[in-house]
Length: 336
Ligand SMILES: NC(=O)c1ccc[n+]([C@@H]2O[C@H](COP(=O)([O-])OP(=O)(O)OC[C@H]3O[C@@H](n4cnc5c(N)ncnc54)[C@H](OP(=O)(O)O)[C@@H]3O)[C@@H](O)[C@H]2O)c1
Image (tube, rainbow, N blue to C red; front, top):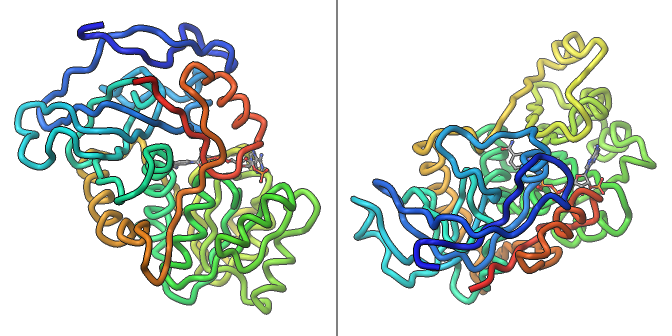
């Protein structure tokens, strides 16, 4: 196995059953990269799209799925030593390559694992929490006291966004597809929650805000929710589109409704951002949010782990996400 490692792989795009464990070349860290021995990784919706051949990794990124990992530092590329020591526990934001025994990570995309936290919890942090942090602060520019409507409130990103809203002094309200999921979002800090399958969330959000409307919408659904989103958006509201699970094809008078509200639509993708942007995001998150994952503070942030699958059960893990069964993150345990 010298120079080799195990990784999740698929030869042709398709369903979860196409995934299998393959022996592949171990990555060699390039300039400014750190080699990490991965103990746990986690799933993201982007993995499902990639497996179906609908989301290619950005240029230069690994073909192996996996946008995040937690493990220990085992080596350094040129110019990357001096910041971390061999054996340091780290978690990483990745453009790909996380569902494997080793991954090479640009220095700026590594964070320390909060002390006492298991790697199966730490692996649930990077992609979902950095996305939620970025959407709220860098894109949506949420202010203290504002109301934020978070769709898919029980998703990996949603469960992080609820908690980060509370940390920012904003008021999170959510939608989700079942009462069980809504209950969990309430425990995490959601001030209200609506089952979008049974309730008119547009009207409910207006009622909740005394007809003022919500200041920010974190929207990973798109077309199926657009009318209700505009119905409940406050004047000068920011509608942040970061996923299209309910399609991107809209027929209707979206622009005039948006104009009358003086609303903004802001699109955001994290994976395709530059290394410099990601490093700045990681730095801001490390300073402003990461300390709250350690116990004892006035506000406690916690990664929500739905389930842990061994790497060779990755088809089952993908199936669970595809069936919308998870609340929080689906984690993969990597063989050592
Ligand atoms: N732009 C970015 O940078 C970025 C980064 C990370 C993730 N994302 C996006 O963020 C979203 C959440 O990702 P995740 O990994 O956290 O997801 P996740 O944990 O798998 O949760 C997704 C949940 O969304 C709900 N959902 C699925 N299809 C839906 C539909 N058509 N209408 C309404 N709700 C639907 C389901 O919950 P219910 O039971 O409540 O319906 C599902 O469990 C995805 O769209 C993903 O692509 C974007």
